[in-house]
Length: 414
Image: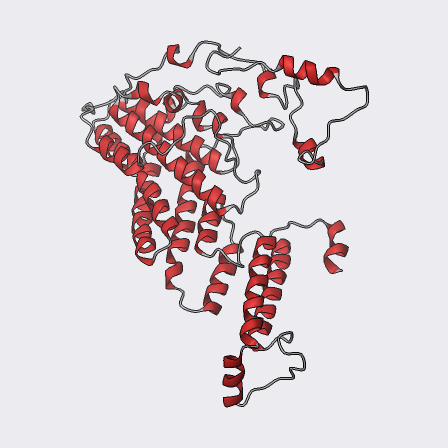
């Protein structure tokens, strides 16, 4: 048994339940449908039951060795690798097998003696908490796009990324005059890299402001994201400094028992270059979200959203955009149609209100209304047209994104 997990035995409960079942009988209740049955954990199957998966090192985490005396190159290697693991999580990997397969992230309290590393881990944790909350709030992503499962992991809003970054920036941790490469200029480059990596915390502050949805917050978020773009360029320029030391403190199967009950997936960790590419792309996408305040008409907003949706975006940016426009656009079509349906009822009521009828008469605009209250006028008709436009856009976007198989074309046609 893994000493890091408090296990509760349910064997007696299962034995009692199974003793009352005959061969061929299945459990069924009003809350256990075919969907729940297909998603249920098969107890004892290592592919589905986390408790049945083979364990690696059984030593408690707080007793495992952790290297904290790090040269600048080693420190940069650790930080670059955490960046790679974070990018992998953003794109469908499990937190338990990416960021939290690092001892430094699983045991943050033990990194206190290395203030720069501790601050970076805390800033990364705060950013991940914000991203996870943003995606869960947006609710527009499938499990294949983003894995939000955090059970058993020390991920919380314990500290803001800005506070963590400020702590690291003021760290008294010395940077030697030269590092093992023997090049004096590497020390200055290493120092710049540390500050650039820590300043990624501005992404967290940008997400916080994006979630507030106010113009002043979105404008400030855009400034923070532009700063992040500049720092990412600095990170890219110095990736070679820590390349030889990536992987320190990383144990891929450390938290295999915390992976959700799904068939195991092969985790392909992003390279440092791929990670920086991803975060540059994410920053650019979030900038487009923040610049939505420049749109000043419904038609322009619709074009802006459709153009954004047609681009290859990630779960984080899609969720951020959806939060800005919560009705009828990029999100779940079924939920959007409910919103449009409510808007249609409002339009119908307005069409048949005495005030609107009088307004139409004054301006010489009437329509056949043999059954007052039941006939759609210009307002309800506009809602119907826009609803059909959204439905058609979702349908056509499926072709652009190659979501349909040839066998689906007949169904799509009808």
